[in-house]
Length: 499
Image 1 (cartoon, rainbow, N blue to C red):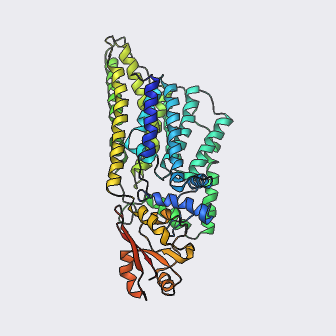
Image 2: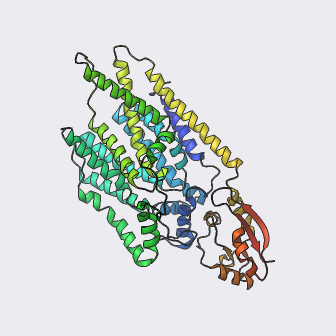
Image 3: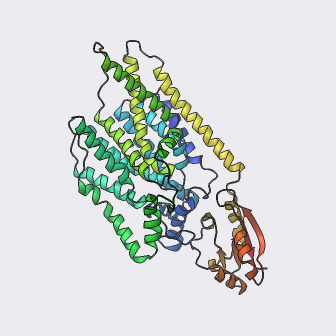
């Protein structure tokens, strides 16, 4: 079994696709704000809100609508909501696998693509994000596409053509409509770092600058969306621009998001990308040691090659995004995810370079191919076992208790959605499970008044709310179902009907 074996490649790809598909089973929406993203698609289809949505708590949705559009489109052609929500990140993960395989082979040789593919597929971050109802995987796909365009121009040594500028513009525009202009953090600093590095090294500059128009024009559709949002929604500035964006740069006691140390992303990448992070550090350390040894030995015939423009671009791509994101006070592990695909290409390139040097050494390192193949196999098996254990834990801890509660509640809910209400929920996932596009428009006082008047036939409420307002009911709801969430914001929910 070698890196060039078609059967080995097929096994690794098949295992990656299977683990990507099942890692988050049984599906639920209580983790990582999945309910916020899912609710936008429900509002599009059920509520007709295609451009600006709300959360299940009545606040403005903070993400642009692209992924919501895609999920809604899948549902409109017959795909069930739980699958439609997860198809965009899943398809994005497959696109990344394909891109890394093609470019891994293109930068090195046959076998390099398999290393890049495996390094991306088998780690804690990718397995989790592949079917998580979030925009991180799609953003990584758009960022990879833009970065590979730069890499292609650098490798070809040709200036940017209109075709390449248009492709870059489309990728940037889609990414902005997915998650705002954060893609520029991973692309523009990398370009600047590459140009500065090449000029410092006195090398001939390979084409890396597509022009200001190619970078600025893709911002216009997103800027228009923001401008209209500010015009039509008075809360848009506070809830989207200020709370979601500007507050992430705040520090001190008034900061909404707890600031994290500068090294936060480095430590998370080191342990969430194991064993690849350790392998990359070992290979880089060995390369540097050999380079210093060869420089110190004037009589040595063996010289390590100078870093290629492609390798310089990958390093700049990784480090520039990592440094800029590390300077933002508010941090979360998934936000640095777009640097992972270029890291996978870099580990592929360094591993294949080590294999070539090991084979050409005076005393060939015959175990080197087996070591790299073993790394791929070990990573695939270990992270697949981890995924299976996480599925087992999710089932054992009953993470889907709220989904089960909503499934059991459906027969009790009137067909007229105006006759039942989810009252001030702590979990936005309830609206997703019940496919209810309405944010809570009733105040607690209105809910109680309509209940006392008999206009509301059923309400879903939690204990804390009933403890606060229970004495204002003329007649208390008849409790027919209850369930206690086991994840964050623990609460016990009840379905109450008119006695």
